[in-house]
Length: 159
Image 1 (cartoon, one colour):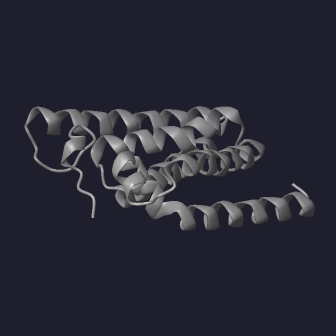
Image 2: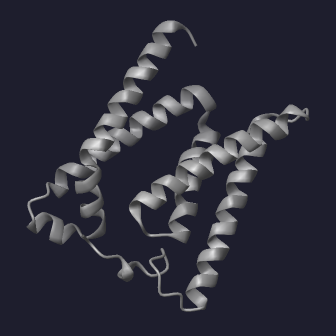
Image 3: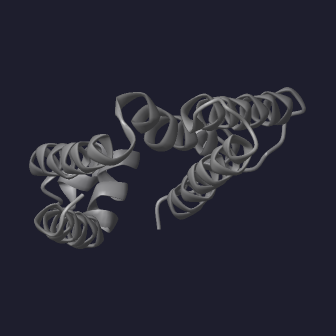
């Protein structure tokens, strides 16, 4: 990447992060209970297209760097895995980032000693994390765990 591309990448990243910081609380509220959020004056209808634009910008930036296949392994799969083990929005975000970074770093380290490219390793690690989280979520729901998990969305409380 040359300097103008890096400048656009940095500017777009800052824009996306600022946008997410601005809409985080209303978006979380509208995601949990859109009817109550609308009754409280949250612009529920406007949040969806704003979030889609921010997500689209994130994916467009990611595709330039890592390619289309890895975007799913780095953006979608870690988030899906995190949602299997918790329903707390801040914890989902934190776990999602942790899972994505673990997949990428693990893929890079495994590819260093191999002739296979990084992509298969990152995808495999990401999917393995998803399977582990799905298993944990299923075990919790079978045992009747009373915590807030994706298996029991009614346990989520709005503060």
